[in-house]
Amino acid sequence: MNEFEQRLRRVPVKSIPNDWRAEILAAAVPAPAVKARGSWLGWLRARIHDVLWPHPQAWAGLAAVWVVILLLHFSQRDESPARWSNSAPPSPALLAELRQQQQWLVELLGVPAAPDADRPRTRSPRTQSVRILMA
Image (cartoon, rainbow, N blue to C red):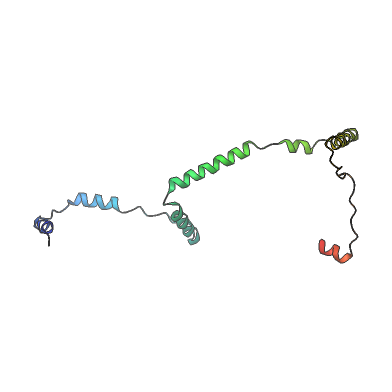
């Protein structure tokens, strides 16, 4: 044995007063945990606690960042598509003017004319079995 252990053995052990002992032990015993309803809910709560406990401030910070992102996303939502969907279709005169402008643009750029979007596409005839499979 080394010298420290020998000196420690010679020191008399003092007892703790009973009042202090009861107070210390009462503080050391954790409060009984509130039982969750049902075993699966308690199990889930324990698993979530195990995952989040090592760094609760980091998880709280991450949650705060997500809340800010969602708030920014919903605050900058554009309601204009809803307004345009309720409006009347463009007039035939406006459509004719737009076609004329498109034609001028094609002539100026020297790009071959694109097929009209208004022209109906021709479809190849399909047999009944193909139509059933496509449905």
